[in-house]
Length: 103
Image 1 (cartoon, rainbow, N blue to C red):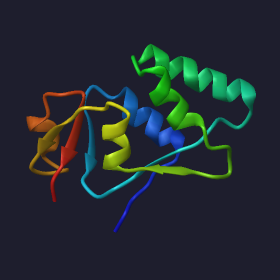
Image 2: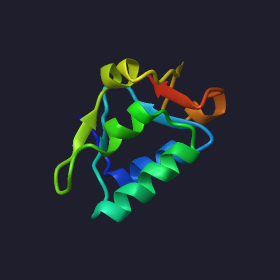
Image 3: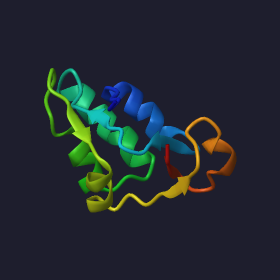
């Protein structure tokens, strides 16, 4: 089963100390509800240290659409992660910013 979350949840995920996602799952992204919201989201993502290409990818789909990001997309955008053995216990072993849990 593929799980996805809208950008509001994905923004929270991005801001976590350790962000963990289950392998073969997706995170969903879309632009804000209006131009001002999209600008605010872009500024927040930049404060988190994301590169312009990563921010553009995350915010390029207008609402009500959603862009489902895969592991392949993450690699292409330069996201690097640590593999952990479990989603539920992964936070204990996750030392990187982003961790990918193997089922």
